[in-house]
Structure formats: C-alpha cells, structure tokens
Image 1 (cartoon, rainbow, N blue to C red):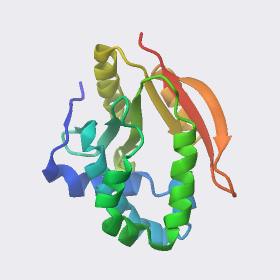
Image 2 (cartoon, rainbow, N blue to C red):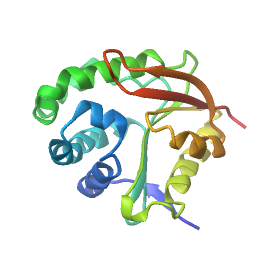
Image 3 (cartoon, rainbow, N blue to C red):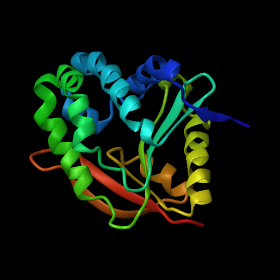
Length: 195
C-alpha cells in the first residue's frame, strides 16, 4: 500500500525538481518553454511557485516526494489577482519572454472550467525514474478520497492524450476537447462525479 501525505514547506525544492522532470516533455510546458534546455532550467522554478500558490488546497506527495498532486479547492481553481500580484516578481523572473504564452494557456484553461463547484486536480506528476509503479494512481486516489468525503466532484485537464486512459480508469469522464488559441496544445477536460 502506497501512502500519500500532505506536503510540507520542506518538500518544496524536492517536489518542484521532481515535477520539473515529470513535465519535461509535457505539451503544455513545451508550448510555454519551447527550448528544451531553457525548459529544464525554468520548470523547477515554476513548480516551486505553483507549490506555494496551491497551498490553499491539497498538496499530496509520496513519502520520498517522487510523486505528487496539487489540488485547488472549490471556488479557488482560478488564482486570484492578489495572489498573482504577490508573486509578480518571481513569476516574471521565471517566465521571462514566455509570459504571453503562459498567460494565453492559463486563460484558455480557466475558460473551460465547469460552472458547478469542483476540486481541481491542478498538477499530477511522478518522477520519470519511478513511473509505471502505481505512484501516480495512488497519488490521485488519495486526493479523490478527500473529494468524495466532501461530496464534491473532481475536474482536470491534460495536454497529454495518453493520460486520458489513466484518468478514465480512476473514474474521470471526458467532457471536452479543445486547443489553446494561436497554435497552442490540444487539451482534454475530464470530470469525475461523486460516486
């Protein structure tokens, strides 16, 4: 049995580095940072900022921090402008010239959020060296158990088509397919109703 725990501040660097490796070839991250070398350098910094902003919800990690999920609670899927302003300097330093692409992608994602309350599975990742061992599914199931206890459905989107099957096995249903404007990646939106 794999145990997931709440991430603590001391996990920030390890989780950010792990997610940087996990998303190295992700279509959305490749869109934001087209150059692979630049992407490898910037992703851990970006995920460190997301680690901070997603503290409003659940940040679940494996004991060794080689798998994790970030969940935003109902009503807080969109990052408030005040939170963005507090992180403006580190966000600009992290994104640099990628800022317009990152904003375009973020706005497209938010435009597809459901109207009804939902827990938002914002990020799910497993260190590439540990993939295929059930860590990703265990990490997601730990969050889903909390969503179920609260009686609230879960929502996600993925830019990796091969992830759709994994999420379907965990009870998510495909609700939409769409693309980010101006040549951005294709996304699959999925909802998991409360059982």
